[in-house]
Amino acid sequence: MKFNLKSLFAAGLLAAATATASKATSKRDCTNYGGKFLESYQSNDNRYICFVQCTDAERKSRNYQANLDGFDGCYSRNLSNVDYCDIYSSQYNGRGCKLAVDYLYTQTRNHDINAKNTARRQCQSQGGKFLASNNASETRYICFTKCTMADKKSRLYQATLDGFDGCYNRNYSNVDFCDVYSDQYNGRGCQMAVSYLYSASK
Image (cartoon, rainbow, N blue to C red; front, side):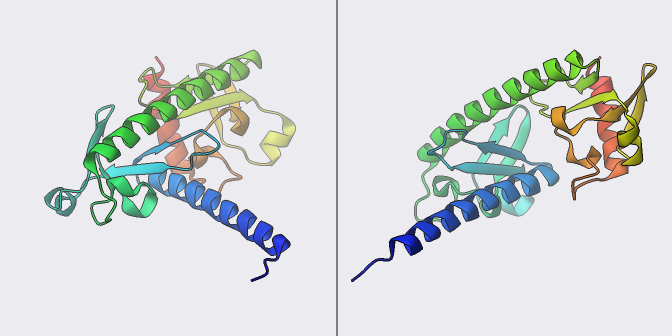
């Protein structure tokens, strides 16, 4: 049998792109459902897990459950790819799942802390107002920087905080509800997030 190297290479790129897209979509959907998304940040490890609020049916089915920073969640097989945690998979293994969850939790937590601290420094270096909860389990953060004329014309989300008039800066924020360039933009949702993070940052 002859193999077309170009075709194999193209297929490999497509598979990698599909896996990345699937991970990105799962992360977005998990977050929108109010779930907890855990992932590896190692280039050779594409595992990810989403825990969502448990339903009564999931509790009765003994779906894998975990408590993450006070959040009691059940494994979502539609938004995850670790078969060790899927009770409907022949690969299910409670011990293996716990090890995976512990590892991905540590990876995600360390990444989130580093990303938040970097965003805070960059936001404040530009004279911006940085909102983030003091609770380590709350990973959302928002930066408001001084509005430019271009910002105002593009209708970026604006807020007045302690006398500071600022526009949402997507480069140092991670709340898509406030990003007018995101398909997740929602003015009401942004207002609620800003109010919560403003209070939580005090």
